[in-house]
Image 1 (tube, rainbow, N blue to C red):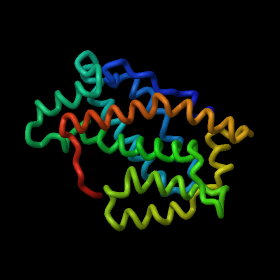
Image 2: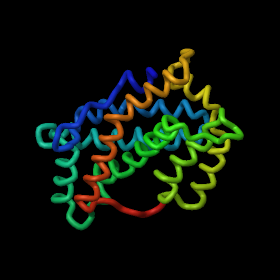
Image 3: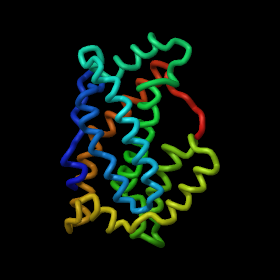
Image 4: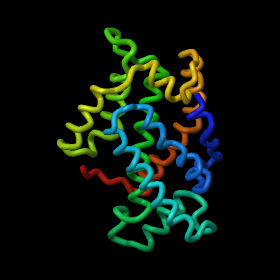
Length: 209
């Protein structure tokens, strides 16, 4: 599964801190994932992820020695912005970025777990819907939800999606899913660590767009 395995996320250290430089490098290769979903609607998430990566990187490059981990950035912005925090800067960008990353995580985990619509086993609508409802739906107003509901109906065939993840190569489904599971080990740990950090720092916001 070249699109995923070519750019794996590094293993987290024992304290589960997420190093900014390696995170930005790994996550910068993920936006093409949304091209595999076919519908142009998913380009909204792709664009959002690209924009948020750019915002986080812009903060990081100002002082790489100070912002070694993502938590370093959040704590520095909390101190600098006071009452405006966490709805500012890289803290806000990472808050939205992690939701897009969670969408990818749940979608891939659902495929790896064998979730499928038995009446339409070659569709991934069930998997994409599960990912959207658990990762993003609660943060979207009804207009955005309607747009995404239309995209969910147009989700690609399972075989086409797995082929796209393999960069067009013909790979056996079981081999594709084995690669997905391998990718998910460090990826899931990273996404979970970022969510835990937001909970610990009380940095999570629950508004809709």
